Length: 287
Image 1 (cartoon, rainbow, N blue to C red):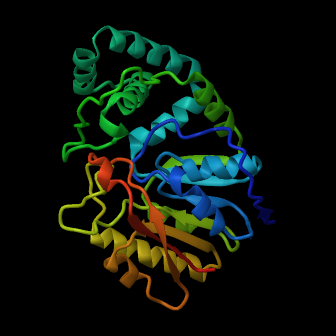
Image 2 (image 1 turned 135 degrees about the vertical axis):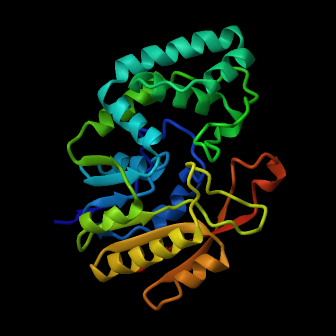
């Protein structure tokens, strides 16, 4: 059975973290490129979940199968779904200590490596709300290494949105897992929609948007992604993909089944505000 997607502007749950490559600014373009009908929605590079939350705001009964390779991020989704009260309590404690001495407390928390679920997730959200530009970046050892941001009063405990997100995720129609993106091939069926939003390919030697985890998204990964997209297409899935306007990416999707269109995009995480606008990205689809 397919589910029809109706374009509405109603939004309930929103991303609870700011994530590199987040799609909130491109939502209208993505909406315009969605198939009119599809079955289950699959997203193996979940990130901040902007597209999923937007789809669910318009169709709360939509079945979603989403995942990400970042285990800390997936733990955050599961914790918000299952242990919201304890998480909010921990975040409130972070907020209280941060406002006493923001600099000292931020770097103290950044050095920590908590082992308990609640503390791990509250640390991730706290750092995301207070670090420079909300940038999630780790070094080769998997250590978060972003400096403190310049905020006067960051919204560390957004109870209203966290509560909405928790309620949204509690439906049995949403499955969340931590795994490699290729695993989606086993789940996606004919008529389903698979949205692929991988770490973007650099468009220059100095650009690098791939440090979501301690493992970079390499050109070999891009080749695996292109093979996956072709296999999904052969199964009869609707496949939609976002990436940078990279010649390398376009070469991997040069087959007749793929249509490529350019869209305007802003890069909210660039440290230089003048370089946040005027960028081109591409949308690739097989329908």
